[in-house]
Length: 387
Image (cartoon, rainbow, N blue to C red; front, side, top):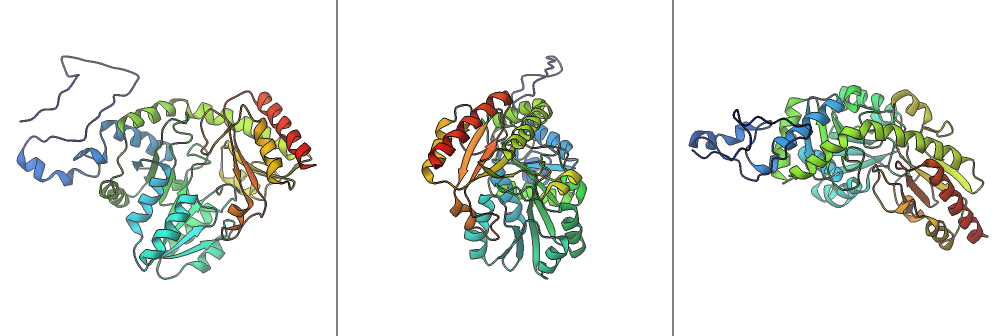
């Protein structure tokens, strides 16, 4: 009988505040019968490294607890988690409703893959009412994909109302909940079938790992997702699981601190003469503020800024000043970031929210006074170049 090498046992007790990292591609079995029946170990057991080791299961259990969910499956990135849900359930002939403010990778999957596979993809206005969504539902509608606030332009959707309509009509719902996180909003509590998080962001918190998660309360859905994880090869490194487990220890503190700084900076920016609009639901002036106030308990760390019109050189002048804000995509880590989204990117989507370029800011844990001073200098440079 093959026996894995263990570093601890009854005669070698060991306790630690740090979780163990179980690495392994191959799972060994006690007998031929056990090996022959290995598939029946899923969705919770271990049959091969692609579906996880005890380190992955520990992380999945902790994410499920955060989401107030029964089951969780992790994936190599937030985008991979979104794809896993769609590929597990959507088939040729199905109709999918997709928020026009969805994450870019999900939009690409829909436009470049699903349509070629005979799936009908239809976009809806992110701020559409539940009644409007219901009018879009067809007999073959399989799934509604939500993201609230929406990517870049931060539109708020009435998630509980849309989920109620979907349940009544027998349609699955998936929500990208990364902005609010489960500490701010728990989609499963509001009737959503699948809550997706980019663990790359708040859960990890240090810009050093890629990961995603899908949480559900339905045991049958859980079994389907675990099967999809194995079929699609969506394995996650146990070392990356360890990093996210470590990040979760400080997650509530980081979320609160970053949220307070973000609200302060967004409020200041809204008052600046060169700022045309700040896209951020916690601001009372934002069109989605009432929904944010009703549903979400966190302030996020991400928002977008629309400046008065200026040319490319003016935007270069703005970004050239930045030192504490690194220029880069992603967000949710301890370092502040700035990214640029040109007008063409906005106008190319269905139901564009603006025809102007946007600057997206992610606020880290730095001193907000220093960040404000840098933004003041960047705005001055923008204004000088703009003329």
